[in-house]
Amino acid sequence: MDFPYIVEPRRDTGLYNAKLGIWLFLASEVMLFGALFSAYVLLRVGAEPGMWPHGWLNVYIGTANTIVLITSSITTVMAWVSCKLRQYRRFKFFHALTIVLAMTFVCIKSYEYHDKFTHYEITLANGKFADGHLVERSKDFDLAKKTGRVTIHGHEVDHEVELMDMQRPEARHIQREELTIPATDIKKMERYGPWHHTYLAIYFTLTALHAFHVICGALVIGFLWGPGSRMWHTDPERFTNRIEVSGLFWHFVDLIWIFLFPVLYLL
Amino acid sequence: MSLKAFHIVFITLSSALALGCGVWLLVSGFSAGGMKKDVFFGISSLVGAVALIFYGRYFLKKLKNVSYL
Image (cartoon, rainbow over all chains, first blue to last red; front, side, top):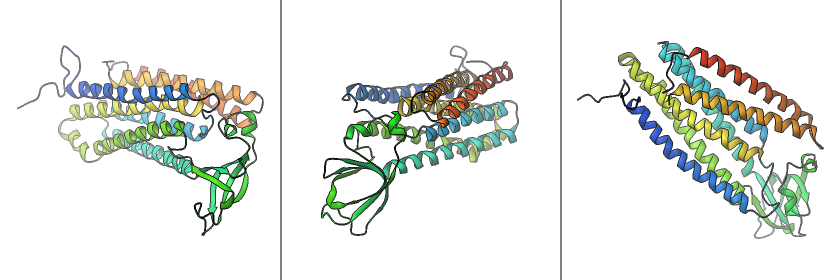
């Protein structure tokens, strides 16, 4: 039994089956990310004045990731164009580049996550706050038993609100130094995980979901580059359609990042 | 919508982002407490925006025979 409209488009819709399918799927994805973006807006609007963070993320790293994804969308399109022009070797080259760029994105994102999970806000017994990246803990460090000490590379402030806007001119010129704090002086010590602030909760939710999409997209592209590319020799037209469909998904993932980057890093 | 049409939408939005980012960095670089690297990256971002616009034109020319659907 032959399925119709696998290769040629249906006359009334102008679409072949897979393209219609991917657009329906992308519509559901728009609803998913749309709901999360709405959650972000509501959390931000509902935050107390001055308590929504600014400048907690490294804009330059975010920019590097943006460049990586924009470049990967160009290589995906070039792979599709190569298929249309029946240039198999060029297709292989561009699709391999897309996979490398996807992996680069994931590596950079992992570095950013690591940076956040080694970043601590320490509430001191004297009411002040120390903020910075963990350098080392003494072997006997135990916050519950109040033994040992911890060393961070950061700075100290009088009020927590001063840690919120790291984009203001004074905050950008803060001199960070190594601070060794005994456990007896620490009231509370918390890393910059999703539990630390609602901003970080929505940041991790949105970016982790996006990174999951990047990994899934890279797996599909990897399959079409490897074992899936056998179809090229039997049905090149249908294979080209598959590349277009994977390219549409990849562009959607890239487009989400184009909205995520300014919302989370710049505004 | 074909990949061609989606790519054009994507490149348009990317150049708008690069343009906005460039302006944001330049404003930040020239305001009180601004840094030299903000100005450098701001200019780089504007150059990137122009490059994306030129790439978009090249892409449209190259794929003029491919449908938008």
